Image (cartoon, rainbow, N blue to C red; front, side, top):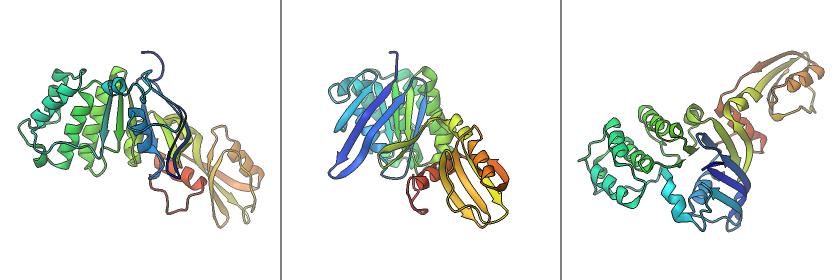
Length: 303
């Protein structure tokens, strides 16, 4: 199909009096990896469950591969894979048995690909699931998720708690099996370094709303830390273009601002700063600055 793989248009979802998503817009194009990040409770998992049709929106519309997951859930789930931290695997089955079981449920199952991928991940086909390490269980979940040849793969923090080597294997497997063939991935995670490594698009959620979104490299070029030193105390009230967060340290202002055209630096110089330097930021620090800027306390910045 042409056009976006996944779109949310003004999607709202409530749980009682709690608003999990608040008029959220999302668009995921083929061949891309969208990193969905934010503190716990920001709406990441809710977004994935809505995309699969496991939850229904209270307002707005969702399209997955051109289908409405509410009324065409079977069509959606035939072409969408899901891998989550809470994946339920039947412990009494062997690796081979659970692959055979999954093949019977999915019309698009690719047995040759599943077997080659199992070998690549060094999974013993005769080993019972209950006897596998947590890392190997994650690898089994990955095989089950990608062997259906999904046009869209949803990852709900699937590598949380795994050692770095296994995380790398799993994420490399995702990249080689989905976006490389024109599919798309939505990776919801609090492991920001992993998101930064594999995502090309990022959406930061807070309180069910998108507070920052776009191409990851362009975001990192735009959102930077500006260190401004003044001869005396910095101005008490300072309006800066693109301001995300600001911290005072004696005669120094540490400003995180969204503006690649130099406007924040120029405004600080015009306010009397005698020394202005610009520093790039990793995604994790951009996330923390965005969350602080949206009213969070310093200690409340879990993704």
